Length: 143
Image (cartoon, rainbow, N blue to C red; front, side, top):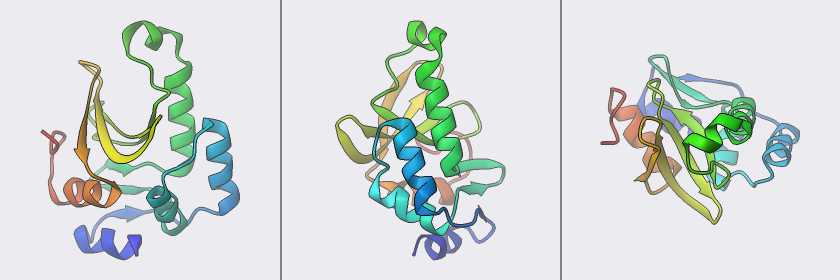
């Protein structure tokens, strides 16, 4: 379903191969959070979505790596609100990151603007996020 939907929205999107359940469980263990159901389903079909050099959805390994780095960076603790409630999963190639809120668990997609540390909802879920991100070009489609 996800692969077909993505390619219908953007035929030139670059999709990774499927992610196995062991890898998905490892990501959840590393982060100490459950992955959203729709993100798991997407990963089972494709490990990331890129379009025109923008990682609209990161691969599973990058989700684990980048979230761990953001949460563990000592200088970030002084600069930004805590990142633990968020699970980043994509970016706009301009420094802003897209995330699910995991504490409490929500399926809405938020953007974190790195320059202001603002966080606001941009989509009601992964499907709406992909529809917007893949149909609209530019770094700031969510404004």
